[in-house]
Image 1 (tube, rainbow, N blue to C red):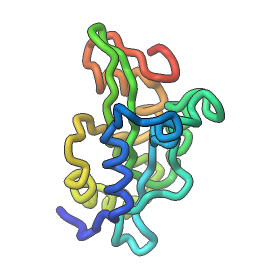
Image 2 (tube, rainbow, N blue to C red):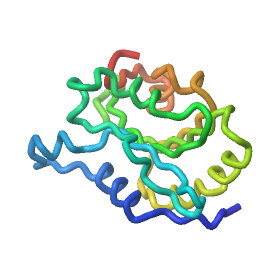
Image 3 (cartoon, rainbow, N blue to C red):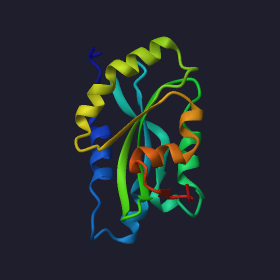
Length: 167
């Protein structure tokens, strides 16, 4: 079921910036790169927009943010739904990898109407996020607070560590 919700150009731009890693990026560009970002429905429920102030920049990791994953989890509201992109850096037995993870946050404490419109609007944002390998629907802090759960999503049964600490 489609909700008729549209994705703003700003959301698409943020996704494309996160997806493309410039090999020749200078230090300043690397610091401004987004590690995580939240998206929400606009007040009129017609558009998916960037949530102001709800992002983690790569340059903040290690300076103002010690653990980007835990900081990201704390950004999620306990009583409403969100969409998120998280740029996960992890290691399998074979190699170190970086992948964008699309997360649909629908906590149990969110109003039913909010869950319904976010669920029915998910395809609109997913269609714009071409090339996403990993999608994760999360329904509460128990599902997301332990980085091992995300590690399992990304690496299957491999031994995996995520940036911010071992798993």
